[in-house]
Image (cartoon, rainbow over all chains, first blue to last red; front, side):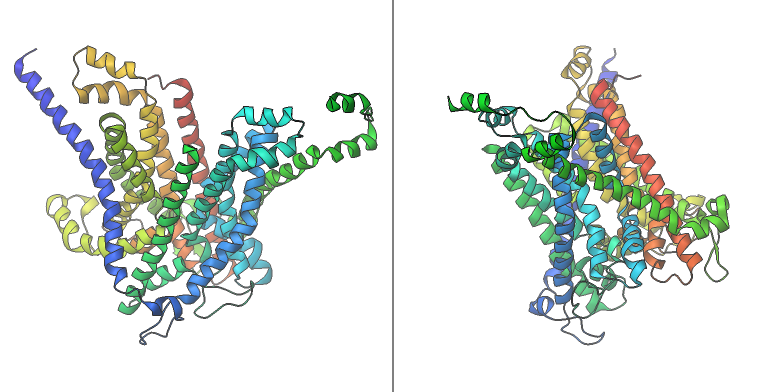
Length: 281
Length: 328
């Protein structure tokens, strides 16, 4: 074992270890780069018009994305009322009632659904809701997003229900509560922090989804009434404006990107904050 | 006291038939079980419906093209001749480039986070990297169009060309959009998944592995690379498959930077087309039922690809967690 051989090994050691550090900090730097670029490019274009005005024809300044913001909220609302109850109940089933094989099948299918590319789910919602009535609708977009919300909610609900300690359930049962009463009054409230954050995270995830909306909710440069019309949404507007050749639209796309990313990151941070607080208790 | 009195006075429930069922219903547990069962089964229903609908609405193109669909290289809406080959090629090439960039980067970062960084820094950085995973795809596309594409056109492209321009991989004109740009954007999107799964897997490697290597005189790096990482090999492979599955289905960011040209070219600077991109671009423009049916068949192909990959990924990750990742 010569001295030079040892020196070489030590040199390799130092180089490789510092490279791993560079890699880790490099990846984090990308996050800050993204945020920085969005704030730089989008912050300057963010004004009151953006939040209150409808899109204006090309060439006119002062247009905004008010309808897209409301549209995204409407779509999220639909996704929530269609998808969250299914996810919650299925999670309760898997954690509390499920038999061995059937639970395995449900879990496997849920993971399968989770891995389906969002554009394929868009095709599914298209053939289910758009084709029969031959027009795009808010409902179709809501259905597509709901299908994406379900697997995430099932996973997190089941996980947090399982985390409730067994002695709490046993204590309830010792006091004479039936199974469903235990679940409703003891287990669910105990896991509620985690379950709610899971729901918030799933909604934050689908808020940024563009592909499934491209041919279900389509888009709209005006206000949409009811649930049967095409509707504008923030991600689709970002996409449409970004690939257009107009500078004003590019600026609006950056602003919308900043708003969207801000909402998504805030939801994620808020969810983790709540989680940390419930765990600390 | 009153509890025992109630138990003694409790009536004997009917043992069979409709009355037994109704009696059990009044207990409430059966209803709860039934309701949650219905919702859980609806997930099965939705997924089966998804596959059935994909199969049903693509039957026109499946009937007309059959297996030839997979290696026909033309995509001709005018003469109704559709083939999946350019899109499968584009999807695989852009994902492969993404993996080539993301796997070394992600693995290095995961090693740093699991082996070298103090716990607090490691948790903090992992948290930030998880935030990166939450960024919507269209925002990556935005950055891709306005930052990566010009960078590729003015700086990175010419730099690569000056060194490797003689190879068929890097020959040809450089427009800024193309396979390489899409691969770079995909790599950034996919790296957080590799890092988080690999980090978790590396954290489960027993300390004895590293300590044994160090006892034999290995440097820190040698013990990590030769004792710890091989132990977690299957789980890391699983994270790569997961990342690949994600990259295959990625739509918006790729659509915005790939150049939208359904051709199979060797050059990485050339524009291409992926399955998800062509569906996103042409679905609402599809004139004619065969056109639409071909697009949906492409969606079915994508679904199958991600289904198989996700299944493999899960098997690998579970195998590491369960079997302890003993190097075969």
